[in-house]
Image 1: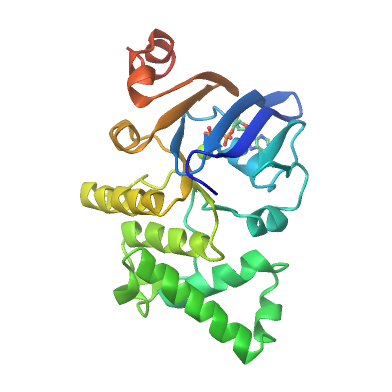
Image 2: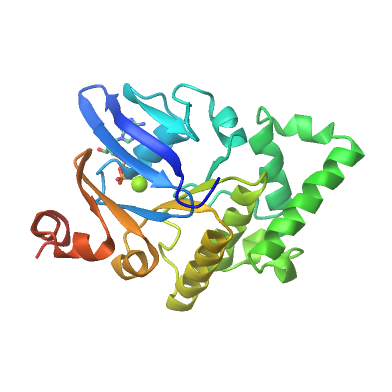
Length: 253
Ligand code: ADP
Ligand code: MG
């Protein structure tokens, strides 16, 4: 997609869990090449919004358009195939496998029905293609040197980067990251921010949920603030920081 072109449009998105409205008619858009932050207190509906966009959960209402097409209700695998990729709030990995194997496995599982047994029936050419792709993405984010380390031996920062490499397989246009900086050391956060800026320069769009305000404010082009399932405000980091509503509701000042 061309920089600045509308990429994702979320329109009156809604999710109810029984009597709880977790996401309440939320609308926002993302343009190609933007880094957008989705912020708000715990329970605001941020992860659920991710699950609705990526088709992990069915919405109770509203729509999601990606590159002009309605993807609402499509299976998550199909949404991934069209170019929306994500990481989860908690690192998912096979600790006993190498970084490269983890990335290749993730790339494989995103394209298939999710049974490990099928992986054992892969033909050599397909397997070689997956490993080439995994290597390429690890190199892209500066992790080529750790490709053959056991994933379980990595610090949290490199583990998060490994997850991003996995999400990058199959070349998405939009990356959704759920709290990628949580628990990271300052240096690891800086490395993560640098990787995300580089991906942005390559034309990718990123939507990230994050609690670390310093990290978010320095990295994002725009912020969407949620509270109790609804969108409170949307604006540049400076606009959001200056907003009395946000200060009262979220920053607590
Ligand atoms: P956030 O990511 O902003 O912290 P979530 O989207 O995880 O918030 O949760 C929003 C609300 O929806 C919370 O009240 C949470 O308890 C509830 N919720 C999330 N997932 C489910 C689920 N699968 N079933 C029932 N309630 C859920
Ligand atoms: Mg969450």
